[in-house]
Amino acid sequence: MNIVLIWAWWTWMSWVAWILHDLWFSNLVCIDWFQSQLTDKLKEKWIKVIIWHGKYKVDLNDIVIYSEAVHDCVEIQEAKKLFKEKWKIFRSRNYFQFLWEISKYFQTVWISWTNWKSSTTSMAIYTTNKLNSKFWLWILWALVPQFKNNSYLINNKIKSDLKNIFDYIIIWKKLNYDNIKKYIFIVEACEYKRHFLNLDLDYSIITNIELDHTDYYKNLKDYQNAFSQLIQKTKHKVLVLENRYEKISKITKEKDKIVKIKKSKFWFKYILWDHNQQNWSLVRAIIKNIDKKIAIKKITDTIINFKWLRRRLEFLWTNQNWAKIYSDYWHMASSIQVWYETLKAKFKKEKVTVIFQPHQINRIETWRNDFIKVFKNYDQVFIYDIYAARESLDTFKKFKIKSIQDLWENFAKVCWWKYISDFKEIKKTIQSWQKNEIIVIYSAGDIDYQIRQNIKLKI
Image (cartoon, rainbow, N blue to C red; front, top):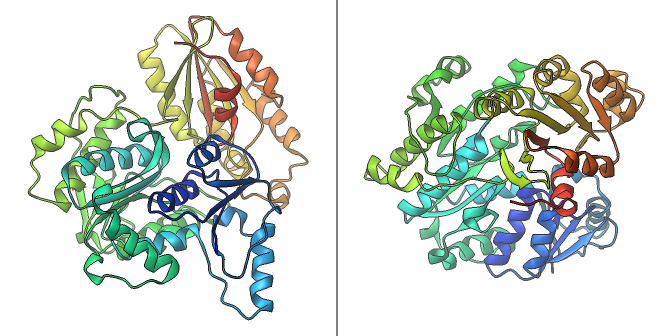
């Protein structure tokens, strides 16, 4: 029997593999269609990684955990067919069903959307881990250097209790009922297809509400309705910032659940940017809600040492001409606007150049005018090939697009940008930038990995 994890390059799927490995599950098989920094990290733990689909045959005794982005891949389809033919229960879960199973057995704190959820989650985890002995695990969509570049953290002091819960979830071993809701679980979750409604929630943090995932949500009202359902599902409190309270409270009848958090000033030792004042305010509030005995000073003295997380305006060093290079995960126009204002405030005289790898045709076409407006502020913009996860040919029909190249050439033309489809040209461009230039790579896809692997950078 193997535990088969499909779409292993995805941050959230890879943490499943890492956690199971750290809880002494050795029969892991991770499958993906391309190599990445995360599949490399899995191999470093001696976890079996298979690059490309169709190389592994699912057995009747296997347990399959998969991303919905690959629900139609050959392994899932062949496994369903096999189990149907043999009249067996298909022991599989998608990622969010597996997350739901975990959340049932812990005090679950959920953090989301639209901007800064990874930063807020990582700060909350870093601080809670130091101050609360009942903390057990966190997960988010970013790697954190202070946790050995992982996107998760386990409390090693309670591994036997965690193993008992996971044994019950995965292979139906006897559960110690004393472990139920004993420990804290903090998770950055996703609202795509209302997946976050799977979670068994005790507390929630909503950083903002801004329409996204228009390949699923019909409009803003539909999107807000999902968050309204989330508030209803949350057992205790929903924390929102004071300046977002009115907007968020309008979408629910359960206003008594919503706690208005005032933004307070706080200066970290290692990280900058104004939005971290907001993140800090939410983190302080959730820690106090979970455990009122923890003093504010203790929280402050702890969180001040938080450093940074990967691909959130991360400084990658410089090229040979001393041009500064940053990498960021953002692919929403509103986020890119915030970073423009942030960078120009810090680097008043330098030129700011962008390499943008769009994430989904839907986002680009829905917010085309917003992207045009934002990128016109930058000194130079280069458009790289799209990262089109989950999208099908129907997307082209919806927007009457002939081809990807046609889309990008037209998109670049209206803003006087340059479209580049060859990574060699990207590499050459990065190496040519001069000392007075700032380069930012915005991407939810693979170009960040390619740059780290193929371009020699220096301090």
